[in-house]
Image (cartoon, rainbow over all chains, first blue to last red):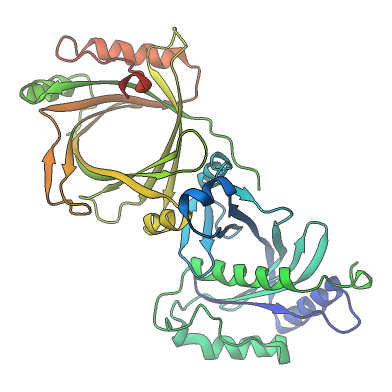
Length: 212
Length: 198
């Protein structure tokens, strides 16, 4: 996987989530990007069951189990500021077996779904973030496919982001951190999605008038 | 996301042979098994426990190859074994196998698991179609984490005949029993109830 930046696009003033997504995708199409199917990323949150807490003597932790349609046979499990595990889809079966120890947080599933666009060496995915039936925001993922070292291509990625996000262009993702010369991988993208989903969860719900 | 159903289970027959019978057993196995050199393996297996207020802790086994660099980590959860079916000549155990990235042990610690014990398994792997026959010796690790400092646990080798197949197929256990007959009287592979060994 190339170096990727995942960010949130604010909903345009006076527009709905869907209308903002349409504005963004129209900009991409005018740039010359070609539609290439759809994508989805989902995230389920688990917390340590009370029965396990006492024996561990530690505060309950939140574990995120995520899936990405780009890697259909894989499952990503991560703790905030902790390790990110990449496993095959039998990890979901394991979580079912561990239900006495880890419980799914109520109404915790959050996902983003949308369209993939290819523009030269860039892969752009614009998705609507939903929790249950309600749209909560917009995610934008941009991958520069030829490069796997963040410090080598961040400037180019930034320039491309500015060409269609304008003033909403994000800063360098936190995952780049001190690891500018490390090889970028899918786990780094999933960490970015986890941070985005957590940020959106904390935000107020998009006003009803804005939802179509 | 719905968890995918587990549809395949290992059927298992086990027994052990004393060290001095190993060469005879390997020679005997070469006959009925596939006409290729048996593979050797050297695995470091760690067993992790997660304790809660449930009666029994949750166990995960993580074997890792020591002689094949780059082999994926592999984690296994063994569930209930089916012993009541008198028509089935093999032990059938509910099993979930998960391939994971290398940081699985760090992740398990983060989940609250702790390592219960570890050992090194060294032996040979034979195949006969879909059957796998492993003959291996278990070595105790004398200093935790140091796989170079080991000691044989016993004067015997464990032999396991296994087939991964959908549950309820008596013909699989029949085929395993027929194969096991060829190894008598050198070794008498049996369906062993793990609960009776504890």
